[in-house]
Amino acid sequence: MIVFGGGHNNYFGSDIHAFNLASREWARIADGYVTGTPDEYGSGTVYPDSTYPDGSPVPPHTYDYVQYDPVGNDFLLFKGALALGPEPQAVAISHMFNLGTMSWRRGPKHDAAILNSGGWTTWDASRRILWGHSGDDAGGNAFIGFQPDGTNNDGTFGKWGELQPNKLPGFANHNAMQIDCRGNIIVVAAHQKNALFALDPAMPEIPLKRLTEDRTKLSLSPYAALEYAPGHDCFVYYSANHGGDIYAIQPPSGSAWLELVSGTWRWSRLSAIEPDFDPIEDAAVVTACNINRTNTFGRFRVANFGNIDLAILIRHVDTPVYAMKLI
Image 1 (cartoon, helix red, strand yellow):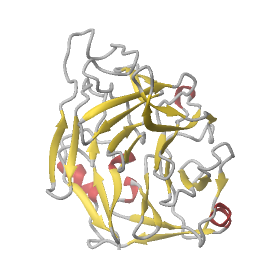
Image 2 (cartoon, rainbow, N blue to C red):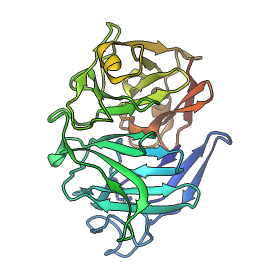
Image 3 (cartoon, helix red, strand yellow):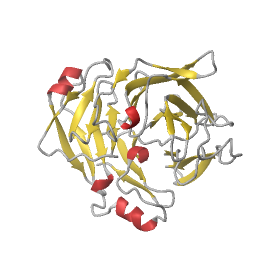
Image 4 (cartoon, rainbow, N blue to C red):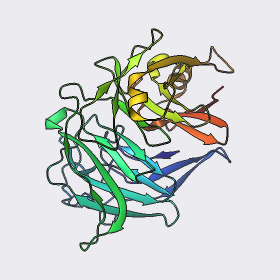
């Protein structure tokens, strides 16, 4: 689990921290850029290429704009920031941190895409595309893919795909999306619509398709997380509003687009070994940090080990890391 980002409370460091599941230990794996002169670091300083002098990115408000590429071994940051502080400025510049070389690469700028607060992403391993959708804030206007492979003449890496317009204008803030392991469908949990929608990664230009859900469906929340559990062959939904409860979303039979969008999607609660344990409440008692109690974003993930799916949740830097085997 990787922790990166910031910009609040006068801290603007680009350091990276990682939790090792095997050793159950935290490590600061990159020191980043954490200090500088007034014209180099801090509130109101502008960085036209979204990059600090040491090559690391100016940390944006990450929301759900971060993913991981296991083949490239890259931590992927979909958007960048030109400035921090009371008036942050987001920019469509992606950054990639390679966990082998421990070094950052920067992507080219997209001049038309507006990737402001409240956005959401998913990593498409089969196409090697980081799909991202902006939030609505400050004119957010984009559904677009970024491919991190390849080098450019200007020293940047990767390329943007074709810009598609906002798929949920007025309802785009703080949703979540995830692609299935076969790369056939992207599911969007749209909380203001209280519904699941589908995107076709093979045809990103077509409109969203609302999915049919069974009567056990959950009431969706903002700031939630949507993952895929390969061992269970289902999507996994988690919101801090539900405490320790994690939910499976089972697709209909079949793998073709028409089969997936025509059938009924079924919700069920995944049982826990300690059904009464609430990690949100536990972390609230332990932490000395200011709490955004309902926020989850990318701090909930599902790791797969063969037939075993493990849900992992990070709340704060001074609380335990919570894990649950999905059964």
